[in-house]
Image (cartoon, rainbow, N blue to C red):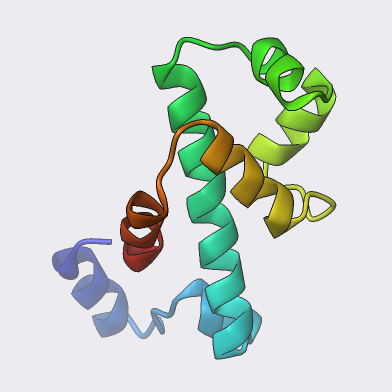
Length: 104
């Protein structure tokens, strides 16, 4: 949200907050969610950059298209371990991963 809009809302009596505060997440929970979402974005971007469909990625992973769809939608049933394995399988180096997570 831009600062002008924020100031207008606050002036009107609204309290502007972030998702962490609104939902009441701990620092650890917030960090885990941001990490998961950064990994999901990386998987989707790399898959598209390589011109792969979800079916092609699923085949490369030895999985199904439905699993890739769940992975790309940050389903809680997809482990961070699986996200990391897929990110690395798509060519992300540990150094690149550190950059991705630093921004998250």
